[in-house]
Every structure is written in C-alpha cells, then in structure tokens.
Image (cartoon, rainbow, N blue to C red; front, side, top):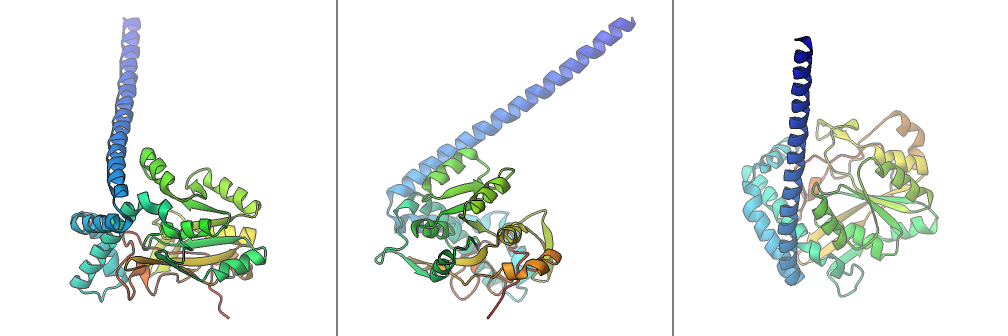
Length: 322
C-alpha cells in the first residue's frame, strides 16, 4: 500500500512537471508567433513608407501618430508627467504638447527606411549642423568623448552625424523588445558599432574606450535602479554609467541636441562638460547636470518634439563654466 501511494505521488509530480513544461512551451510559441506577426506588419509598413519620398513618409507618420497616439492609455502618463513638471500648463497647452510628441514619434518611425539616404553634411541637404568644432577640439587633443542626448526630434540623426563625420563611435542603445524588429531597425541605421543595453554592454563599452573610441548614448530613459537625483522637485532614479565611464577613462562629455525646423533638421553640438576636473567631488556626490531642465524634452520655443512618457535625468557630472 505504501509503495502504491509513493508511486502515485511520483506520477502526480511527473504530470505536474509535464504540465509546467507544456505551458512554458506554449508561452514561448505564442511569443514567437506574436513577434513574427509584429515583424511582418513592421516590414510591410516600412516597405510602403520607403516607397514614398522622405517628406511624404514623414508627414504620413506624423499624421498617424497625431490621430492615434493621444487616444492611447499611455498618453495619461505623459499628461501626468507634464502636470508634475510644468503645473502652470493649461489643458490646451498640454494637449498640444502631447499631440506634438506623438507627431514626432510617428515621423521618427516613418523616417527609418530613409535614414541611409540622409547626408548630414551635404550643403544642399536637409540637415543643418552646428558645434562640431567641439568634437574637433577633443579629437585634436587626443581626448575620448562620450556624446549624450535625449529622445528629441529624430534622435537617430545624432549618431548618423557622428558616423558620417568620420568619428569612430559606438552607440549604447536599448534594443526593441521584438528581436526581429530590432534587427530590421539596426539595418536602417547608418553604420557605427551598436551596443545593446544588457549584461555584455559594460564589457563592450570598456573595450571601445580602451582602444580610444568614443561613445554616444541617450541618457533620458526611465530607470528602476541607479541613484536618486532631484528632477523638477521630485526624486528620479538615474543611471550613473555615463559619469562613471567619463571619470574612469577621463573622457570629455559632450551634450548634443537635435531639433526639427520645418523640413530641415538641426544637429547641434554643445561645449564639453569637463568631467575630469570633478573627479574627487563626483566620487562623493551625485548631482543632476541640469540638461533639459529649462526646456525638457523639446518643450521650448519650437514645436513640441520630445518624449514625455518618462522623466529624463542625468547624474554624476557638474557643469563647469568659464
């Protein structure tokens, strides 16, 4: 009788284990199937948008973004962030900013198939550039650079500009959740080494800096870890990776900004933050550097171009003037 009970118990355990494995396989299958469906849809959309001229594709993407985006539930997060950061905004102004954000996101997506066509430094092209003398100065002095920006206008233009300028640069980026779509977007980008965030990112960035290369990154993503810094009167968890790398490898840190100006795009380099001079104090303290606080996410004088779904912040560096 005891042996029978024991046998029955083992059988029950085996069935439970089999059910768990089967459920896991079904979840994996569903996820892969969903990824393939998304990839087929993305491939079709990119093929259609790639057939249109760049201006038309951008306008179509912007129109779709404005029509759909503000109606999505996630827009409530944008409205909440805006009300916290800029409480004096009226409902009308807030709606305009949110619609502009979605317009910009739609345009960015629609412009991916055309990225390789864009010649940043063509005098007759659509991109204006300013401030690249700051990069020249760093290169002439044999300095390594970390160039950072945010999700404003078409943020891909910044990396494109660095690559076409002839700078050996690697970009740290967040890979898309769908690996098939991520590979598709990677093919659209205009060259340069791409380092997805994750376990191997730290090792690969160290290799790049040790060989004398430069890094670019978008430093305004929401994080659940990192270090707390004050941002618009609230505490925001912020990555210290940029500051840690700059201090460890004695890099110049260059802010950059991309703006839409009608049909044109402006790529602007800004003088370097002298990180090395703050080595000792930065080891003890962490400060927000103020980047974007006066005009967060492209909410300044021009049309709204920023992403306000996550509050941006940057820690570990103190701006030096003079």
